[in-house]
Each structure stands twice: as C-alpha cells, then as structure tokens.
Length: 57
Image (tube, rainbow, N blue to C red; front, side):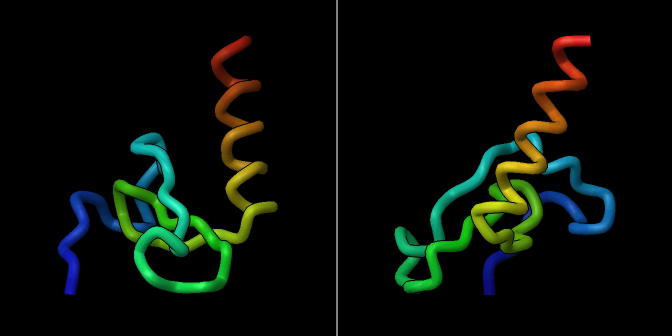
C-alpha cells in the first residue's frame, strides 16, 4: 500500500493530481499526489477553480 505524505482530511491538494488510468485503473478519476484521495474530473476541476480564484484575489 502506498504511503501518502498528507492526511486526506487536512490536505489542500496543492501537490497536483495524476490520472488513475496511469496507475492502471480505468475510472478516469484523478488521485491527489499529496494524500492519495481520488476525485472525479468534476471534483478536480472545482478544486482547481477554487485555488485559481483564491490566487487571483
């Protein structure tokens, strides 16, 4: 089992995402590189949009 650097409950998902397909799954979901939590494409987009909005003020 993979050990992740961060706890999913406190992770801000700033480490980026990798597609599960790259890891052998066929869901099309994304895995946070920091905590290992998986997200649908829509959930990932919401996280990235929120982060962009926070960065732009």
